[in-house]
Image (cartoon, rainbow, N blue to C red; front, top):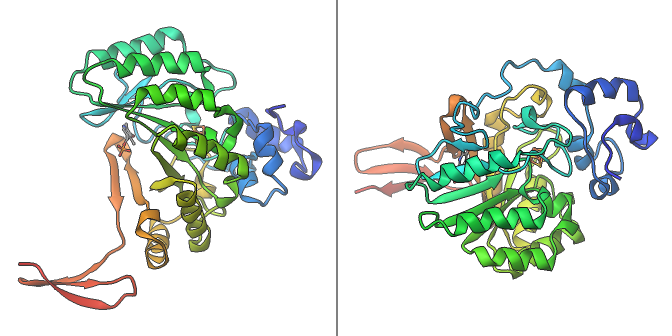
Length: 336
Ligand SMILES: *Cc1c(COP(=O)(O)O)cnc(C)c1O
Ligand code: SF4
């Protein structure tokens, strides 16, 4: 059974249901059986991502939509920020609701995207010949029944100007049984199709998650990962190292690490950007380049994403730059 209210939690995970109810009334709670089975105590990394926390109510950062996604929505389910690619929000549902979700404002129990809104989104993409890539997101696209998801992909796949399809999902680790061989085989009709999977902690890479990723990879779908830097969950180099290395081992290429967006109710997960960058620099020392994701911040007011890198240039002269290596040793590098 999927849990949607604090009093449904086992006692050791909820000392005071009446307090947590105030949180879940404000920001919906949802924990499915797979994730519940991974939670041992309130302090473990899955629990911290999914259990309502009273600190959510203490955070009054102003804007539920700091990235101005709504303003960049030409039709309700499309976010259009870059010239050639759009995000198409095909579902408002997820099997679990992460407490730090940047689209917290949109998460409502059981809300469906109306078929008309899907049609409007498709129409918008059809009439935008300069677009060449569509990213299905949400919520989670895999919350749609296969028939509906495949219909949308098929329609987009047959638009001549759409060259690349992408799905952003958390399903392979939060509801791995959803990824069947049949689903993967059906998806493989829409190549080039890429799937990016949200992973935050090595404990999420269970045997079941590994199997789901293998099923997709075996269908020829290139897999990437997206991770959010979260205080208390993954803000140490050892955890990130294990996460990214394990991802490579299951054929998921680490793609992005995101600085958490400042949406209300998430401040207790926030990490100073300096610390995040120091972690990325630490990783560089010890991890294969293949396992190294890009560290991204999403600019307020819909400015788009920017990659941040640890400082590597110590000094610039006319003919040479002084660069420091992974071990902080300076080297002179001729630039002309
Ligand atoms: C993140 C994002 C994308 C995808 O960006 P990539 O850098 O290609 O992964 C596209 N559109 C919007 C609005 C986004 O926020
Ligand atoms: S899976 Fe993604 S969209 Fe869904 S609640 Fe978690 S962060 Fe938000």
